[in-house]
Length: 170
Image (cartoon, rainbow, N blue to C red; front, side, top):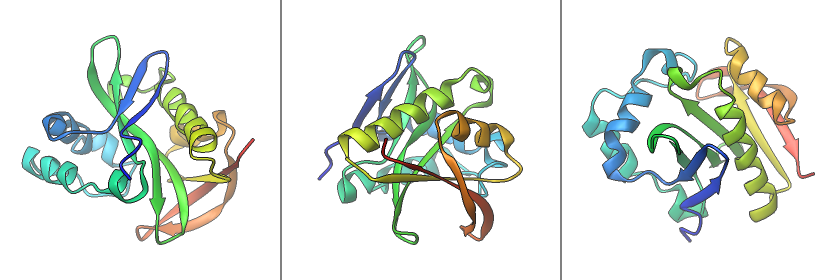
């Protein structure tokens, strides 16, 4: 499978699969306390753990798509990730994103999320895409609203209560 390791491009971002050479940037993102408090996931503890997570990320091989690194064109720096993930526990496709705090409030998550949704609907021809956000994360909820996702109840996701959002193919 492995088809879509390169994702859509936006005016300010290039989206592409992470490689092991991105381990330091992936660690910086996924160990940052301000980022991780909004995820419900444990923070990475080392660059080696980040490298292992990248090496063992199999979504591109299994389903042909996944979460992409968001490379800020202006600096060529990885500033976050965004993309689609098939969630076997729910049998649905989820859009997710995570950005370094110094890039919050600039519309980059909205830009990446909108591009990921368009990719899912137009390239993958998905009928619907979901998203999950913690109630305590109003900025993430606002991103989902801006890209046209609608509230669709509450679920337990990774043992945490989360709001669920949904968007159908336009």
